[in-house]
Amino acid sequence: MISIIDYKAGNLKSVERALKKLGFPCCITHKNEEILSSQRIIFPGVGAAGQAIEDLRHFGLDKVLRQAFETGKPILGICLGAQIILDKSKENGAQCLGLISGEVKLFPSPLFSEDNERLKIPHMGWNSVHLVREHPVMEGINPADEFYFVHSYYPVPASDKCVIGTTGYGIEFPSIIGHKNLIAMQFHPEKSGTPGLKILKNFCTWNGHYVE
Amino acid sequence: MLSKRIIPCLDVRDGKTTKGIKFKENVDIGDPVEMAGFYYKEGADEIVFYDITASSEKRNIMINVVRRVAEEIFIPFSVGGGIRNIEDMRAVLLAGAEKVSVNTAAVDYPELISEGAKAFGSQCIVLGMDVKKVAPKQSTPSGYEVVTHGGRTFTGIDALAWAKKAEDSGAGEICLNSIDADGAQQGYEIALTSLISGNVNIPVIASGGAGNINHIYDVLKYAEADAALIASIIHYGTYTIRQIKYELHSRGIKVRNTW
Image 1 (spheres, chains in turn brown, cyan):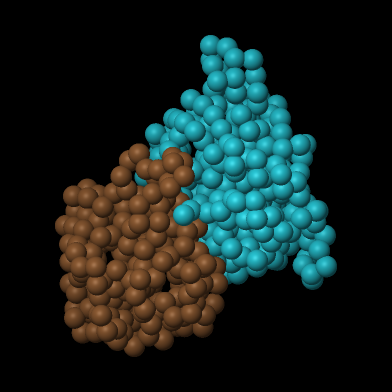
Image 2 (cartoon, rainbow over the protein chains, first blue to last red):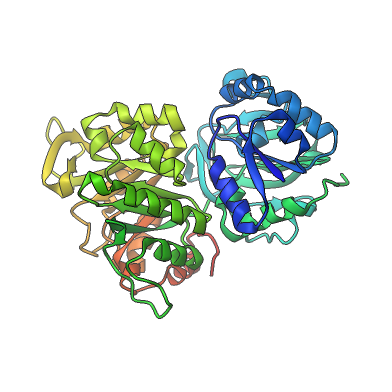
């Protein structure tokens, strides 16, 4: 069983539907024991960091996530779930979970492309990922594959070793980060067509081992 | 680098699409779920459903369509038409849509945008704008006026001011439809699209007027549009999405590679 963590943030059903399509049993839950007894955890989220952290704490899920991380359970963070696993966020000045050391930053403004075109914030739409490290969850993903993003903030791990992939939008920012049994992506694999489903499928069969 | 999005639009009435498609593939031309599945496989970057069901008793049919679409396609899609309040938004989002689009209801009650953004996040809220060119006057200095009811009702609201207000209220995106260009297949309204997109910091989807690939190229290249909405030219089989994206790519527009 795969737990999709429910802390009232975002479109959890789309993750559930994607897993169903792939044939992996899952449940949307905030029950601590249910999460800790599942084989793996998906941690999605949209919205603001401050509110999200508050909601997580309200359900005791901050401790559950830490416990699951420390016991080696494979964890996948998506979008806001790829941000609040760091120490802190510039959004609302929120203190976050600190599973990976680092912080969440806002895109600089104004932002320009290489061709000096003005770039809008949020970064919304399809963009590619440059894989800087191999990771089992990214197996079979090609440089030409694109993924659906919608965000104004992005994760910056303290150690470069935690950066698995980067994406260019005015600046080159970490779009996939990982540490031990935790991998997280700023884009939405559940909304990213075939390559997105491929990542979810990889995650659902990953044993959580990753050599940095 | 971010890709420009190509977004097919399906008009749905009482659970059936109103414009058919002529393809060899075995697609039921009246079924929005099958059409969405087909366009998904063809490389659509997003899909827009516009519910033109007249009677409110039949609104639930659309919710069922949304639910079935969400099980089949794994790209974002939005639903517009008849979204009057927070509860309508919630029903569509819970059924699986990524975004809701508000148009007339936001003109009647502008707080709907901020209330929707607060409840569901800006990324969910699309402002649909129908716009007509008018002589510039005090109330509409940009020379473009927001209209409703397919262009029959003039609101007295300036299009540029409305776009900026929507952005400030928390809209995550604008779908900008030129009533003058809509259905004519003579090209998008470049000046209008450029004016709006150049003056807001949220993405703008250009809508109305696509008749050939040149039109799409022009609006993406010269009007700062972040995405192009297309309908007739794919529904009637003039082009496939694959063809459109490949051609745009060959001409130097960054699009998601799906061919």
